[in-house]
Image 1 (tube, rainbow, N blue to C red):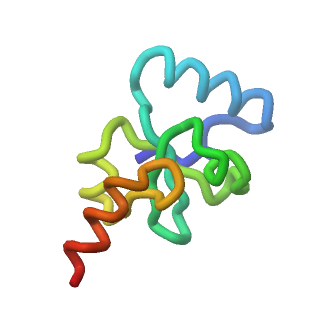
Image 2 (cartoon, rainbow, N blue to C red):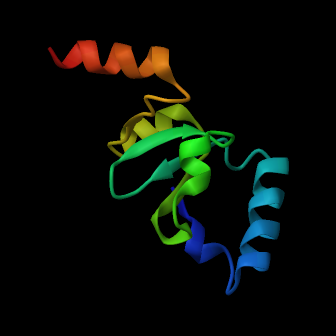
Length: 87
């Protein structure tokens, strides 16, 4: 897990770091640290969150191992599977 705010001292540096990490396939999913939710990097909900609450994962296994659940917006099917497994 990589915290967004740890990627640079300002927004421009963080954006450049994120682009590099995506290009290198180091990150593939984004997450919301307060709600323990992960989703796609293109998720509209994820793009609205503050940088200090955003984390990145290389893959789904890493996100699940960190205790995160799928996003109900961009990963609807996986979210419903996760939700149904609880009951």
